[in-house]
Length: 156
Image (cartoon, rainbow, N blue to C red; front, side, top):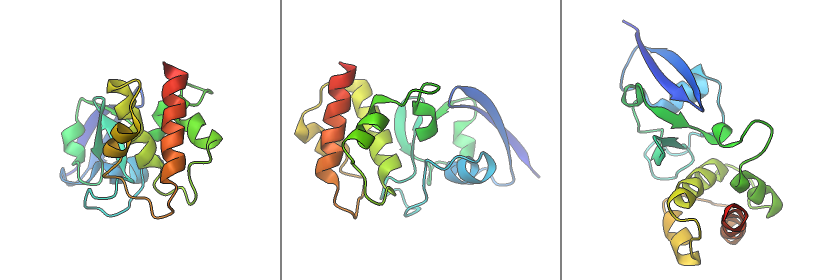
């Protein structure tokens, strides 16, 4: 029997109908709500491609059951921007050409946004540590770090 799960998504209320409360949030975001920022990477919470913010904290949506977000606040890559203005991290990633294939971009930006919420001016080592659980096979790590430093200086 289908169950309705309501939550706040990118500043607006949404409801999804689910048959299994263990269904990953990632599936609801992509398949039911049409958002494609969070990506399926490993399905095991190891790569970070599916990262979203849940009540302000970075979480892996591939292992977060959709039932766990009922009456909570979820922000995806699409929700970082303010109307027509990109979030400073999104703009910095463009300016620094911080992605090659772009598959890891969602996780890198969402993890970095969570870091900048608690640390407005992170060091190189703090950024490296925060991104340690995000995999990127293209090797754009140095540009990613430059983009995060650029965004930090734009917001401070």
